[in-house]
Image 1 (spheres, rainbow, N blue to C red):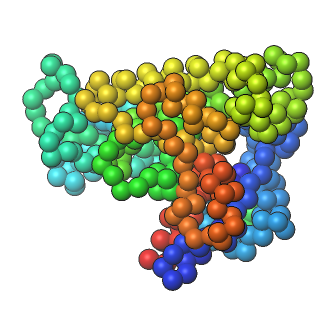
Image 2: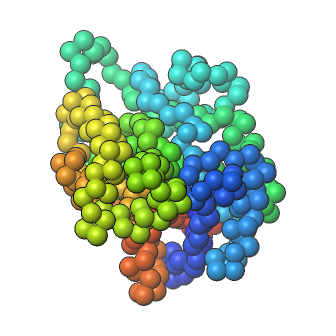
Length: 345
């Protein structure tokens, strides 16, 4: 769990505090391992984080990000019609893409803007010549909303919105640009890929590999406990001190991830005849030392670490630590920025 507290002062978002809590121990597992905790355990963990004296959270007013895995996101093609007509048609069309009854989900949608040059049209010789509109369709199951509503209520928080984590991340790490970029969010169990263009998600993909796979591979290869492997991974990363054997082991896991990323990039570029301008790394797994250089070598494209804290004001002495931890807090900063805009326009 990640938490970030911001306050607006003189028109700027000022960082007051931030903190995180590993959930592994709540499932009797190691730190760094992915968990699927029951609601009551999440409530317990969040309550513990809110009470942490070092974190010192002083507000209950918040927003909450929902994991991408708890949502369904799809781009659907609709006739080029006025907004009101689309609004009545989309719930009917959505049934083709959502594998559960529409009554069981909350749906939202937005029209994807077209380029003036029309060069974002898919290259398809058999495509119908009729005018159409691409629409980003998002659905969240009612049970998920109920679960997060219960978590918020039982921890005494006051949340006015839930949003899917990718939208929080986009708000915190993207600058104003029409150039397509890829956001790579490396978590413990999965790595999520999003191609974003003109402020809209054009493609998303999940790879079933994450930073815990690096830890488990290190543990098996070196014959050491998971706890020690996690400490080694976090402490040394892909630095020269780690040695070539360490890098080989890490590459066993990451070569699959990079292969999948390259395939998604290639598919996007073929479909839309556009080149990605860069890849932005976020998530806890992207804090591995040396991963940017390794990613750039494998992807042959500019790779940068996401730094959401550049959109906040903070003491100068924190600059280095915030740059290093920034990728992990992309979602939390994005949520806090939205809430700040909401309460103080």
